[in-house]
Image (cartoon, rainbow, N blue to C red; front, side, top):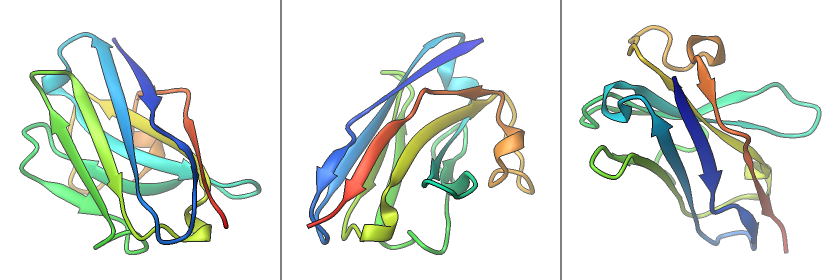
Length: 126
């Protein structure tokens, strides 16, 4: 089992940047596929980005590609999401997720992931 804790959320103006972090504890983080999802009020949880076990493969939702960058440090048991050029519609609670298996077909589906953090609020507003 792995425990996940997100941090780094906050209020930022449109066009600004934020860096979210996800700290993992418990079983071997380096063996887990990782992802970020987000959920805005009244909306379903949606996929943002995913990263393979090795960190060499990264995948993004169309809405964030080119603006967000996902990365992981298996030595420090952490995953990050660098968010640039933030838009008001990026406002949501951001969750990190982990699963012991990578799936090329399911990495963007929330029901693929067994472990979730508590979420961190990101608000983009002037």
